[in-house]
Image (cartoon, rainbow, N blue to C red):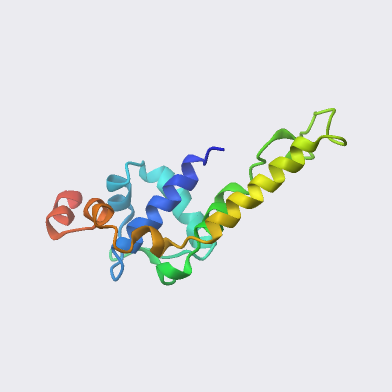
Length: 153
Protein backbone atom coordinates (compact mmCIF):
# COMPACT_ATOMS: atom_id res chain seq x y z
CA UNK A 1 0.00 0.00 0.00
CA UNK A 2 1.18 3.49 -0.76
CA UNK A 3 -0.44 6.73 0.35
CA UNK A 4 -0.91 9.45 -2.20
CA UNK A 5 1.16 12.61 -2.10
CA UNK A 6 -2.00 14.54 -1.24
CA UNK A 7 -2.65 12.37 1.81
CA UNK A 8 0.94 12.72 2.97
CA UNK A 9 0.75 16.49 2.52
CA UNK A 10 -2.57 16.59 4.39
CA UNK A 11 -0.96 14.89 7.39
CA UNK A 12 2.05 17.24 7.23
CA UNK A 13 -0.29 20.23 7.12
CA UNK A 14 -2.31 19.02 10.09
CA UNK A 15 0.85 18.31 12.10
CA UNK A 16 2.14 21.78 11.21
CA UNK A 17 -1.10 23.33 12.44
CA UNK A 18 -1.06 21.21 15.61
CA UNK A 19 2.53 22.13 16.47
CA UNK A 20 1.66 25.79 15.91
CA UNK A 21 -1.66 25.63 17.76
CA UNK A 22 -2.93 28.95 18.96
CA UNK A 23 -1.97 30.85 15.85
CA UNK A 24 -3.19 31.07 12.30
CA UNK A 25 -0.55 29.73 9.93
CA UNK A 26 -0.11 30.89 6.37
CA UNK A 27 -0.17 28.62 3.36
CA UNK A 28 3.29 29.75 2.23
CA UNK A 29 4.71 28.85 5.66
CA UNK A 30 3.28 25.35 5.43
CA UNK A 31 4.47 24.96 1.83
CA UNK A 32 8.00 26.11 2.66
CA UNK A 33 8.51 24.00 5.76
CA UNK A 34 6.63 20.95 4.42
CA UNK A 35 8.44 21.05 1.06
CA UNK A 36 5.42 21.52 -1.20
CA UNK A 37 4.23 23.87 -3.88
CA UNK A 38 1.57 26.35 -2.79
CA UNK A 39 -0.66 25.25 -5.67
CA UNK A 40 -0.60 21.61 -4.60
CA UNK A 41 -1.06 22.63 -0.99
CA UNK A 42 -4.08 24.78 -1.91
CA UNK A 43 -5.91 21.68 -3.16
CA UNK A 44 -5.12 19.80 0.04
CA UNK A 45 -6.13 22.74 2.24
CA UNK A 46 -9.41 23.01 0.36
CA UNK A 47 -10.21 19.34 1.04
CA UNK A 48 -9.13 19.61 4.69
CA UNK A 49 -11.46 22.59 5.11
CA UNK A 50 -14.37 20.92 3.29
CA UNK A 51 -14.01 17.84 5.51
CA UNK A 52 -13.95 19.99 8.67
CA UNK A 53 -10.38 19.34 9.80
CA UNK A 54 -9.27 22.98 9.49
CA UNK A 55 -10.74 26.45 9.34
CA UNK A 56 -9.48 28.86 6.73
CA UNK A 57 -9.63 32.60 6.60
CA UNK A 58 -8.92 34.71 3.54
CA UNK A 59 -7.23 38.06 3.45
CA UNK A 60 -4.19 39.79 4.79
CA UNK A 61 -4.46 38.29 8.26
CA UNK A 62 -5.82 35.00 6.93
CA UNK A 63 -4.48 31.51 6.99
CA UNK A 64 -5.46 28.19 8.45
CA UNK A 65 -5.76 26.48 11.81
CA UNK A 66 -7.18 23.29 13.23
CA UNK A 67 -10.96 23.21 13.44
CA UNK A 68 -10.90 21.18 16.66
CA UNK A 69 -8.31 19.96 19.17
CA UNK A 70 -5.65 17.60 17.81
CA UNK A 71 -6.82 14.84 20.14
CA UNK A 72 -10.18 14.89 18.32
CA UNK A 73 -8.73 14.47 14.83
CA UNK A 74 -8.36 10.80 13.97
CA UNK A 75 -5.67 9.82 11.51
CA UNK A 76 -7.99 7.19 10.02
CA UNK A 77 -10.61 9.78 9.17
CA UNK A 78 -8.00 11.98 7.48
CA UNK A 79 -6.69 9.07 5.43
CA UNK A 80 -10.21 8.06 4.42
CA UNK A 81 -10.97 11.64 3.35
CA UNK A 82 -8.11 11.52 0.87
CA UNK A 83 -7.78 7.86 -0.07
CA UNK A 84 -11.27 6.40 -0.40
CA UNK A 85 -11.96 8.00 -3.77
CA UNK A 86 -9.27 5.87 -5.34
CA UNK A 87 -9.83 2.10 -5.59
CA UNK A 88 -7.11 0.02 -3.95
CA UNK A 89 -7.15 -2.53 -6.77
CA UNK A 90 -8.89 -2.82 -10.12
CA UNK A 91 -11.53 -5.14 -8.70
CA UNK A 92 -12.59 -2.45 -6.22
CA UNK A 93 -13.85 -0.21 -9.03
CA UNK A 94 -16.96 -1.68 -10.64
CA UNK A 95 -16.86 0.85 -13.49
CA UNK A 96 -13.37 -0.02 -14.73
CA UNK A 97 -12.92 -3.60 -13.52
CA UNK A 98 -11.93 -6.02 -16.28
CA UNK A 99 -10.76 -8.88 -14.06
CA UNK A 100 -12.44 -12.14 -15.08
CA UNK A 101 -11.99 -13.56 -11.57
CA UNK A 102 -14.22 -11.03 -9.80
CA UNK A 103 -17.01 -13.47 -8.93
CA UNK A 104 -14.75 -16.17 -7.50
CA UNK A 105 -11.64 -14.43 -6.24
CA UNK A 106 -10.70 -14.78 -2.59
CA UNK A 107 -7.82 -12.35 -2.98
CA UNK A 108 -10.28 -9.46 -3.12
CA UNK A 109 -11.79 -10.57 0.21
CA UNK A 110 -8.30 -10.72 1.74
CA UNK A 111 -7.54 -7.21 0.44
CA UNK A 112 -10.81 -5.93 1.89
CA UNK A 113 -9.95 -7.37 5.32
CA UNK A 114 -6.44 -5.92 5.14
CA UNK A 115 -7.77 -2.47 4.29
CA UNK A 116 -10.26 -2.66 7.15
CA UNK A 117 -7.43 -3.64 9.52
CA UNK A 118 -5.24 -0.80 8.23
CA UNK A 119 -7.93 1.84 8.68
CA UNK A 120 -8.90 0.31 12.03
CA UNK A 121 -5.36 0.72 13.30
CA UNK A 122 -5.25 4.29 11.97
CA UNK A 123 -8.53 5.01 13.78
CA UNK A 124 -6.72 4.36 17.06
CA UNK A 125 -4.27 7.22 16.41
CA UNK A 126 -5.04 10.91 16.78
CA UNK A 127 -3.16 13.91 15.50
CA UNK A 128 -2.20 14.63 19.11
CA UNK A 129 -0.55 11.19 19.34
CA UNK A 130 1.74 12.23 16.49
CA UNK A 131 2.74 15.66 17.78
CA UNK A 132 2.39 15.85 21.58
CA UNK A 133 5.80 15.48 23.20
CA UNK A 134 7.48 14.98 19.82
CA UNK A 135 10.26 17.52 20.38
CA UNK A 136 12.23 16.71 17.19
CA UNK A 137 9.08 17.21 15.09
CA UNK A 138 8.26 20.45 16.90
CA UNK A 139 11.79 21.67 16.21
CA UNK A 140 11.18 21.20 12.48
CA UNK A 141 7.62 22.53 12.32
CA UNK A 142 7.39 25.22 15.01
CA UNK A 143 7.32 28.76 13.73
CA UNK A 144 9.77 30.92 15.63
CA UNK A 145 9.99 34.68 15.23
CA UNK A 146 13.28 34.28 13.33
CA UNK A 147 11.73 31.76 10.94
CA UNK A 148 8.65 33.97 10.48
CA UNK A 149 10.83 36.86 9.30
CA UNK A 150 12.73 34.58 6.90
CA UNK A 151 9.57 33.11 5.32
CA UNK A 152 8.00 36.54 4.82
CA UNK A 153 10.81 37.80 2.60
